[in-house]
Length: 90
Length: 505
Image (cartoon, rainbow over all chains, first blue to last red; front, side, top):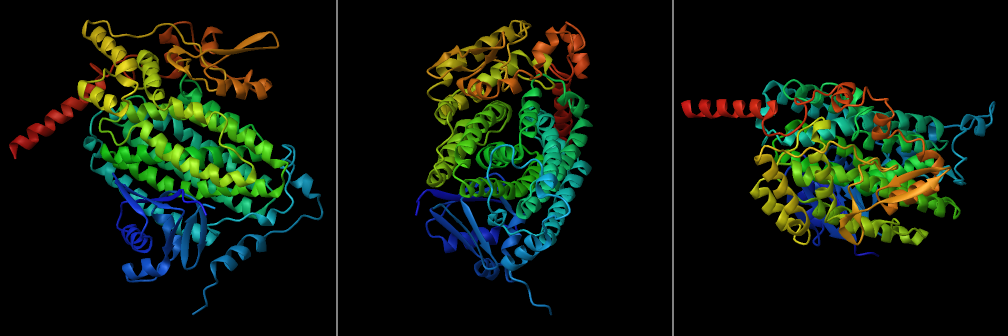
């Protein structure tokens, strides 16, 4: 599997904060870059967003499709289902 | 309570499950456009949308985005948000963005509607329908921004008219005309993959973050609201490429040529964004060079390594584009500085602090090649002789940008390429644009080149005031040097009022 960075950029908003927290907790290799109005997260090879992990931080169920409200950009092949949203390079 | 249908199953039911093959009419007659380009598709059901977005979820999330966006736009208008800008010079970048890009959003809306009707795969139809509606939304939100800024500032009063006529707006216009006049799979490769996936980050992401940094709440909000749709469009772009490459080996060389062509088309178009980032944002967020390294060299590099398994290599002129990251923003600013009397926005002399930033960001090129020119122009302006170039420039036949780019191995020599075709000579700014012409000369000889059209007498007259009149631009109001402009005056008056108000409290 490639170790090139996959990447996701989220808005710097209240909706996105628990997602960023879940990503940093669940992907120890992730690097977070802060810019005006946005947060870019890079991670070698693979990055996962767990619906359960975001839900724990929000205090309610979180549907990975809610990502549509916060995402600005991404890089990598996507795999999405009811419980996760993953990015990877082959 | 009804049991929730799993995402994958729901996507199946609401795409494939709602489609049928025609029987009264031959499918080839119903879908006449998806074979002539030579692309071979054996199994349309192999098309996957990794987001698995279905219409019900689409409308739910888009409605939520619109509620948030219009609350901000309304508040911005109500509270005189334009007064919070870092400086009125920022508006130059905004005017170029809004007049150049907004009509393209509308074109994209129309063409994705066309594709949704004319592609025979259901997954692709649904994705194209959603993108068509997205693009209409982007056009609308940008027109709201135009409407607000037009109340206070110059140059935004007739953007649709200008888009069809003004010389530099022919750069984005002809780019999109080229894409919509291609076949459906070339359009997907051009717009969904090469532009949206590989290059659009450079247009929307650092520039919008820069808008936030410069106090432009309206733009950053529509920009990031649009970009949340772009993430889906980018995914469509990568998916369509992988799908086409997996369907048939014969598709590989066709796709590779389109990637080569549209990468260079996009790179040339984005040189305007490079100028906006390096020269027109009063508060800088990152240089064009850094943005290029982050989004093309790193992210694009990972992408093309991933696609190597299909036999796809990086775009043909990628090395030249990487090489140009040290130059193009400076070269394009020089073009607009000297032709600002024919533009719909102002340019200005660069102050010492800004030059120091450029020098730090471009240590190999700025002091050596570009600072002396900026110093000379500033001195000329101080002497009462601000430089305006009164000769019309040679335009590149393909990208339509004035020929101000330089040789790959020599940043001091203007790059000229030319070809004879059917007895006429055509000129190009680069090897990339010449390569594109060579593959489809019969298409590009039809280009509507603004300078040629002026000389042929099709643009209102022979003198610059006649042409500007025909553009609906007001000479000396919408354009020329920022220093001494009406826009500078009104901005300084507002700021002075604010200082007086602050002193009273």
